[in-house]
Length: 362
Image (cartoon, rainbow, N blue to C red; front, top):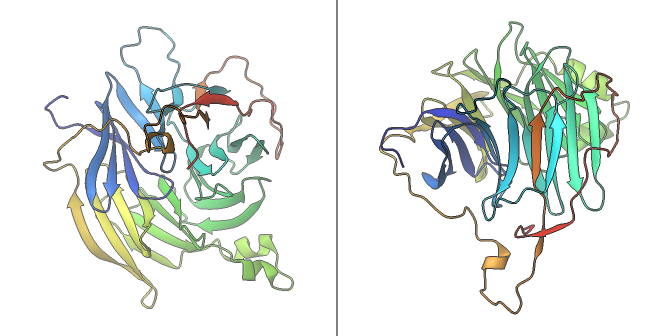
C-alpha cells in the first residue's frame, strides 16, 4: 500500500446505509458508519470512479478509469465482482455513461439495478431474478440523467436531471411516476438522493450547498377517495418540508442512519462525515457531530467484507454451491439502437444466469 494519502474520487452508501463506499486514486475502500472505520481496502493501478456494494454481500460494483490504456478509444466499463473469486457471470451493453451513474438494490432472490437509458432523459431498470426477471425503460426527464437512486427494496427509483430543479420518483416494475418534488428554481447539480428505509422520506444534496428532506405519499394518501397520483405530485412539487444550508458546496452524499431514521449522515469528498438530526417541531436539521474520516486513518486490509453462509463451517462433506448473479455493464456506442420504447418490459438483455459459484443470498 502506498504511504501517500489517497484522494477520494467517489462516495456512496450501501443499500442498508451501514457502509460507506469510497472510490480512491489508489483503489477502493469500504468503511463502517457506526463508528467510522475501514472494513475493506483493495488497491488497483488505476482510479476507481464508482463503487457500489450489494447490501451485506461480498459483491461490489466498480467503475474504473484505466489511464494506462493505450487504445485510442477508451471503453469505460462497470462490473459486479465477487470479492471471493471475482467470477463474472453476466454482461449488459449500454450507451456511454461517463459519470458511472448506477444504483443497485438486492432482494432475497434477485438483484435490481438502475442506469441511464438508451436515450436522453430515460432510465433503464433491470431485475435479475430466476423467477420473475424484468426490464423497464421509461422517460424520467427532458434533460440528461444526473442522479439515480433505488429504495432499499428496489421497488422505487428517484431521479434528477442535469437541470437539478425537479426530482421524480417512479415505481420500478412499471415505470409509473408517483411523486415530483421541486428542489429549487435555479439550475444545480444533484449530488445524491436517498430514501428512508420506511419509504416515508426522500433526501437530496446538491451543489447549491443545500440538504432537502421531502415527504413521500403514504398508503393512506393513495387510499383516500379521489386521490390522484398526478394531483399529489403536482401539489407537492414546490418545496421540501425541511432544508438546511451546508458548510460546503463540494461533492457530498447523504443517507438516513440505519439505527435512527431521524438522523441523516452526510459524507463529503473532502473527508468530512457529519450527522444531523431532523427536528420535526422546528422543521430544521440540527448538527450532532462532524469528523474527518481520512485523518490519521489506518488502512487495514481484510480478505472479505462479510462471512458468507458457506464459510460458517468448514465441513467439506456438506459443502454446497450457491447461486450467484454478477453483472458487467459495458458502455459502448456500437450496435446502439436509437429507438426508445417507454415502459417496455422486454427481457432481451436482462437474463438470469443460473450458474454455480460462491455467492450466497443471505
